[in-house]
Image (tube, rainbow, N blue to C red; front, top):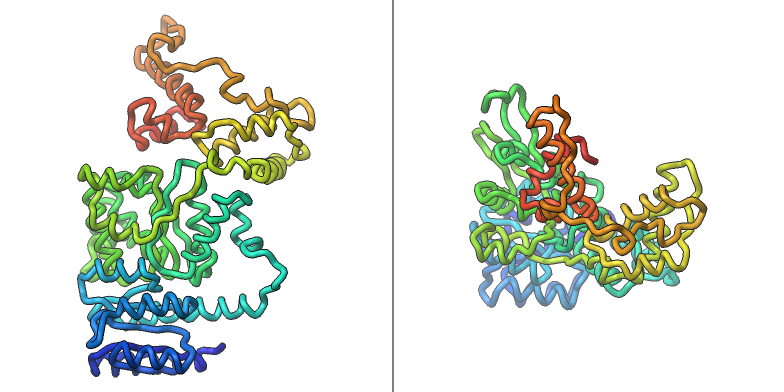
Length: 465
């Protein structure tokens, strides 16, 4: 279907706004139908097929949310956006939860509206193309980007189905799950399956950016705006324009940045440091966390309004202990990748006993831990078969304790300085914490009672990989 054939339904009771939207969308080459209330909207939907619907929230004979709900149920393939009053975040979030594709605030920014409409129409074109090319014998969710998420367990099938559904919306998604469970992969799949796939996917670890640099990193800055700003710099929001921004470890955002981030998301615009005006950005926001945000909200460490805005829809990624049936498939894939990367040997096979040990092992690092175990096993295996001993799982390893009285201090040379001696002890503690935590850095930092940022710094300081 080309642009000229695409029909758009506009529902608004204000004649001036209807005329403005009609003119704007007609200039985009679209066939526009405008109506003033819910009754006429329902009649129009029953008379013609539409490619996109834009509705105001406040209508003479009801609420735009009623129309969103009806379209979601009766015309599930029709993207619908809502026009909300300025500052009415609750309305926008409610609409997104009910199935709205996106929202735009009054007064309507026509540039933002055009981008929104183009994204929605692109989604419709892609779905129509997929439907025309679909092989009826092909199992659902069995090919394409979703193949990157290996597994056939019920838990992972539910996850894939949810990802496919979320890719059709522009609603913010909070991806939750344990460390190493594949949250970034899930976010990438939502991006790759959606209409923004041709745009950039920008992941940012919120816990890895120094606090004093956060505003510049997210929003950019102008030359001379502060000491060291020798040139204009584009922020992460601008870099993700037209695509998706993933806020990984979003729970680590300091409160002052939470306020600024909330405004950027609500206004769809950012203010670079030193700039005199805001810059519009067209970005879909996804966030990820391995910490439950609700307790942080209740304790005042995370703003409730930002939580409300980010957690429109939650996607939970199952941990590896919940999907042990997938471990044989995952292990086979990872061994092939390891063999290809190392390129000095064929991918070994895993004995039945070793596979049983992998499936009964209690994972704290999830998929990332499984990869580490397999990398270690490939190194240790003396034949083309990986045996239980090669896995070096906890039950086959000596007990490692982090109690101070059990840490064997290194011998101090007479010429060694006190600082160097203390550094040797600290390095050993870091290495033992990593082993004890099965190379889960977040858990190792918690065991040592230090922040994740401090832990990363110390790893870098001592060259520990």
